[in-house]
Amino acid sequence: MNPPGMATADDTGRDDPPPSVLPGAPFLQRSAAGLTLDGLALDALAREFGTPLYVYSQRAMLAALAAYRQALAGREHLVCYACKANSNLAVLQTFARAGCGFDIVSAGELARVRSAGAAASQIVFSGVGKTAAEMRIALQAGVRCFNVESVGELERLSQVAVALGRTAPVSLRVNPDVDARTHPYISTGLKDNKFGIAHAQALAAYRRAAALPGLRVEGIDCHIGSQITQVEPYLDAIDRLLDLVEAVEAAGVPIHHLDLGGGLGITYRDETPPDAGTLVRRMLARIDARGHGRRPLLLEPGRSLVGNAGVLLTEVQYLKPGADGDAKNFCIVDAAMNDLARPAMYGAWMAIEACVPRAAPAQRWDIVGPVCESGDWIGRDRELALQPGDMLAVLSAGAYGMAMSSNYNSRPRAAEVLIVDGVPRLVRARETVPELFAGETLLP
Ligand SMILES: *Cc1c(COP(=O)(O)O)cnc(C)c1O
Image 1 (tube, rainbow, N blue to C red):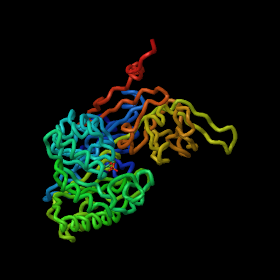
Image 2 (image 1 turned 60 degrees about the vertical axis):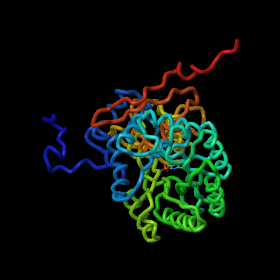
Image 3 (image 1 turned 90 degrees about the horizontal axis):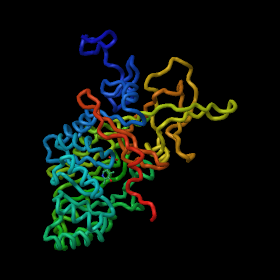
Image 4 (image 1 turned 45 degrees about the vertical axis):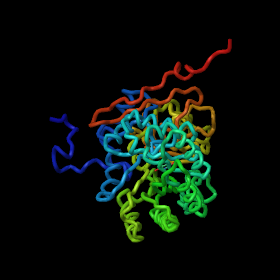
């Protein structure tokens, strides 16, 4: 029996489930105990594990993956989780056990996904600056494909492969020159952009790839940006890509798979991105309409698999009300730009909620961290009723949160908890101060 007040929809069969706090985050709910993730009270997790603390729901991650997979059922496909979004080993293991592939951008990520149980044949290697050493490691591991971003990289990869007596499977990352209509820092598909091979140069690059002794052409690839909230940029990119596939094949170079990258956005505030199923179905319809429906399909989602599966918990340290009526009120918390860079780096808006709301009038606060930079803010002009010691949750923090954290101001990095079948598992211990300078030496 549940104690009073703990009745759930399952017990009664009648109660509505508690409301979700954010579209696309079905496991984040508001209940009598305050905010919960996958049924666990966030305030209690913050007090048990300490703050700043990242908390993720495994169930939410697997549900996000399932949405892609269901829409791809019946097609030869591989969903490759772009692990730079959140590369905690237990998160990677979650996806590896679910049979998911991985998109990596460094030898470090290769080692991580392998440690988490990923099969090399399920790994694609992206990135604009692969070193020869990284190529060697990835070739020896036997990754499924190198997503190559320049002709120089083609030449180098062929040399490295020949020296190892191997053949490198390649796909060219083509820049389709479409506008993903997202933030300039995370838009990657326009021609004035460091990523990919220009559409106009791609045919020549494919001819070169086919002629090089160490390479085998496998596919074509694009990734037009991140936090994309519309379907049309993807459809434009597909058209541009398929035009090229037809031209390259007419020139005698067969192309097998299509890799359409990642980039699907999530709701941080009031964005209304398509759900993954809708996006995939519309992409498939376009590919089929163009007569390319039998090609194996790869996708590289990052943010949309993990972003709304996680929160960052932080404790209110001090309140500094403004000196007069117009001055800002500052709420200083124990998380900072080193823990969560998105607001400072992109001006990103992230929802901030009290884990247990107070029944008191709200005031307007700037939520800031302790780092010595005026850019160190988590949220501005937030209406909240706060007291020191309160726990706050920064929502939608599962992607590009911990993964972009640093030790600026000699701040140890946060701990991470993954909720697995209703049990909170500490999957990364809080960093200690001695670890911060363990690799440094004093002069003699
Ligand atoms: C970052 C990245 C992704 C994932 O992007 P999201 O916006 O997180 O989905 C996919 N492919 C490549 C090549 C990337 O660099």
